[in-house]
Length: 155
Image (cartoon, rainbow, N blue to C red; front, side):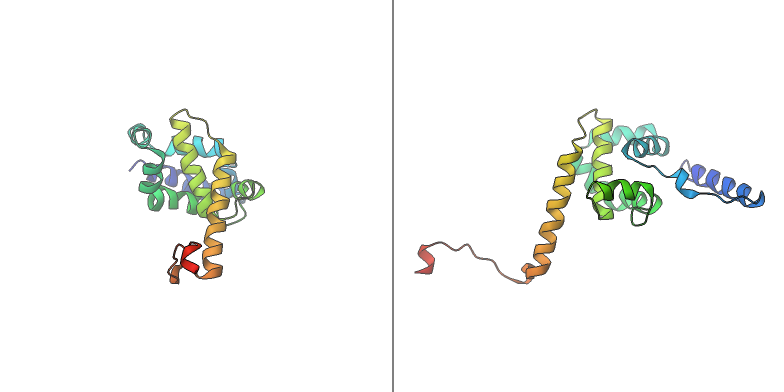
């Protein structure tokens, strides 16, 4: 029920804006950077949910919330379009919405745990992951049985 209140308020602001003959820039309600993401998530998630997030490891949190909170972040913060947050990540070399979402979730866990965010390392990991996926698709490695070759086995 607490999650419907912000949506209701946004709808009320939109209706008020349309009635008054003004246009509403939705992007002003979207986070522009990670700090904005943290503030938005803090305002949307109840205290007990944030405590559960902190109690999990980063990997557990990311895995448990990929389809729930993660997809909510992608959809509601327009990570597949030209939002300011998208442009921020794109400027850092992160081009896939799923990678952006994973960095946001990991960084939020670290923010709550008061750990170092280590953004460059997260970006490098996302790039490496995408590179591996592209190589697998390029060489169709999923359909090939790979064997460990040694010099002796080739004689």
